[in-house]
Length: 133
Image (cartoon, rainbow, N blue to C red; front, side, top):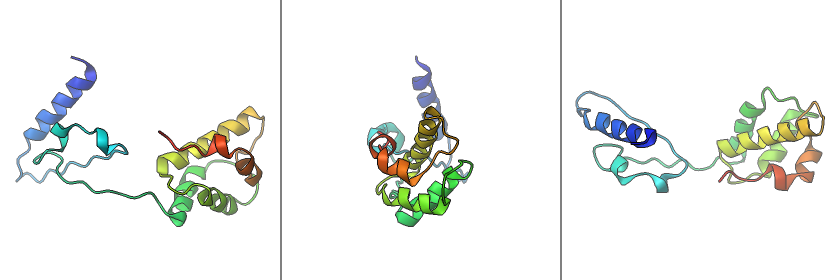
């Protein structure tokens, strides 16, 4: 049995052992709910689903503020966050983190000290703004 299958079997066994009176709450998150095993989502295991939508413009700016806090930028960081947020509707936190990381890698490849300029975002949209699959 592979480690993945063994882990699933162990998780399901442990979840079946919970008594509803013990007050144990199991929270899980995924960005791919369509691939969840039905054995995991049956009543008595993880039976409730809460969908969280992608952040709006203001939310994307807040997510970018977290991911960019240690990333040196060229220009005003809040302006850069606003530009990137306006270019990324539908992006979630992981997508925005990827944009920040890719911008830093692009800057490093180009020998630059700062990762962000508004010019970079307009010139490299195809490279920087690809959603994660």
